[in-house]
Amino acid sequence: MTMTPLADFLTALWETGQVAVPELSPGGKSDISPADVTEATLRLHCYASDERTALPGVPPTVDAAAAMWGLTAMFAACSLIVHRQQTVEMFASQFDSQQLDSSSSNVVYSVDLALRFLPDVHRLATKLSESDPLCDVLEELGRRWPLSSVGMSFREPQETSAVDTAAWWSDDCLRQVYLDRIIEREDFMRLHESCVADSLRAVIGIHDDLSPKISSALKTKTVALTAPSAD
Image (tube, rainbow, N blue to C red; front, side, top):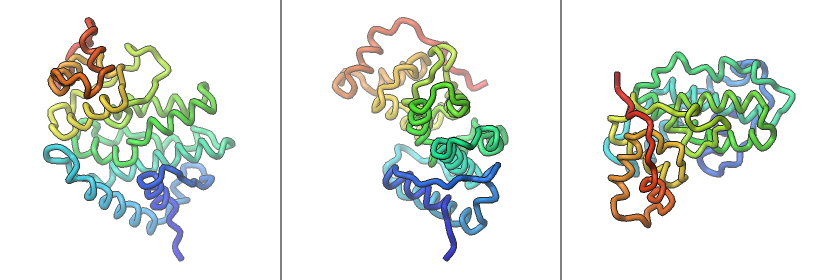
């Protein structure tokens, strides 16, 4: 029977939130077989297909390479949390997303299929040790992929942890998902982007009961960062 630890990790993330991760070899790639990659890719597409009807507007399409990167990054992060003898340096390539176009709606959505669990993984890492280099890596990922990091408690001051949504803000689906997560998770840091604050005011309107705390913050907020530019 073929072992598929990566695909099984994905299923556990989506369906229970209780994951099991093996101790990985440096780089982690040798622990993932071609069959595992194939199965994990199939399941990523299935989960994306299942949620499409619940997403607003026209959802982006799945970029398989971006989705797989997000999944392997979460796989490595969780392994580091469980197996403390491992080091972040062993998995530098797993966390490097510079080859991905973070301005592409398709890439942002695809990465999010696994990276949406980033705030939970970061919370576990900081509980173990706020000085753990893994926390730095996860927060850097959170800044690069803001859709996936809503609700993450950055350790730096808000003004230095600001995220940039300009590249995909015009995508109706991703923008609404982002706003919904901010409301659900009461992520006040995101209100420092004026375009986000203005959009939330439009969404909430007079219906303060949608999110009393966010609504109150919007009414009392007097300073906002400059609205992001697509340039």
